Length: 336
Image 1: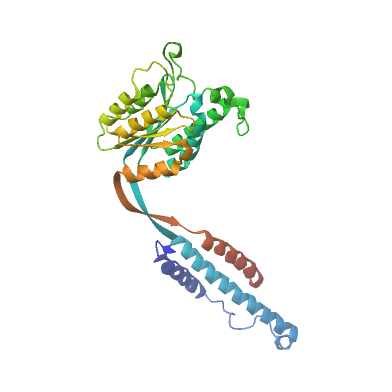
Image 2 (image 1 turned 180 degrees about the vertical axis):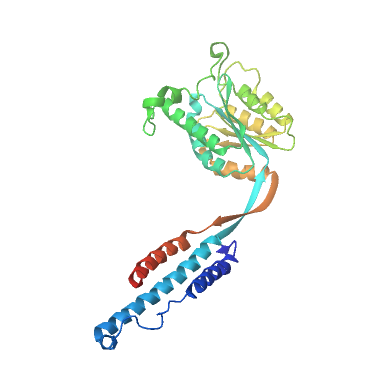
């Protein structure tokens, strides 16, 4: 514990005791004598002696309580506090979570968003965005460092995935059923009848163009989940989207589903490798490993400094002050 204004611990008791000393100088004329005559007999009795002894004990307790109250009051006014030092590291990374939300990827996406929540809450200085796609792409969260907002959006994605997979166990669907059900579907099937679905290259390219082209000093990353099972006519192939990412200096960390076809896996693996990123199978995939690889290979430290914070800690002195103040009031009523 540290004291912010230590001089008050000396000054306040000194002022209080000087005031008491000054007031005490106004002595009563009969202070050192008896106001009642012929009391010698009473003073010799055991009852009187016991009462005087009891009075003196209470008087001393009153003095002690008052003295402790003054000291604790001085301590409170001097602001006892605790100083904590924390090493703060801020990174200038931009990370977009890019998810193929066709139903064949639901299992992977549920695991991904559920685990990424903890990772997002530990970030400092990074900006995070969320983009989903099927026929067309939708930006759920633009790049932001509002991690609470990102975490809440990941919660919404997870609940929407559960509803679309008929899992109602952890969701109160009475009020938000339709909103949650369509949370990851609305806007992602625009042009579906003409172009089909699961347009993988278009989805990745859309994420790549969601980064700012003006901020050259920021590291750009995409966490990309898909089964790479094309079921339509894309504007761009996956390889073309990977080339765009490479040109924009964006690393793609791709995660494939468990039931992914071998040729789709190979194509996706080559595409993410082209960007300098890495491919992960869902079968042996863990969020910890992908985050660890991002930390090792894509760290860009913006600043590192030690931040010192002072917290007031008046709780214990205040509780003691209240206790001794109550004692002082109680004992002083006995001697006045």
